[in-house]
Length: 180
Image (cartoon, rainbow, N blue to C red; front, side, top):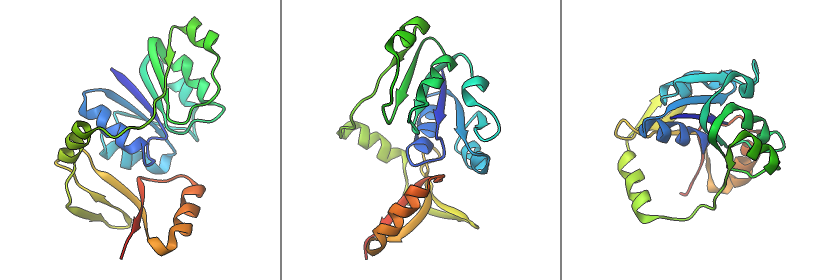
């Protein structure tokens, strides 16, 4: 199976890259060029820099597109999918159901629900050991399977600054709030 993750370096996308790889997929990561080495370290087989090429034209015959960016342009990935492929937007946008039917693809979304067994599995894939990487963010290293990239850390008293960081975009991993 081939999985394309749009917004692959962000808080959701970097987990999607690793979990798809863990499940045996060939992973195509889409992000800006600044994130290529980060995503390749996480297991991306192919990287598309959206600032240099149009990912919807560069990727073809994809089984699943996980779009963590969303917005009005999400439907552009419909033509990257092979017949019987699926588009899974994290932020649902506007899609033409007739266009999807003509292409033989499905579009679906879901609400996040807690699931004890799934959380236990994820817990086993993570570890509490922290490894700094020079000027890059620290990673929580997980049993060689899932790592948590840390974009930035703020004390809870600076939650506003954390939101401002999120609003600027181009995040690599998660933004963390610490409690004293």
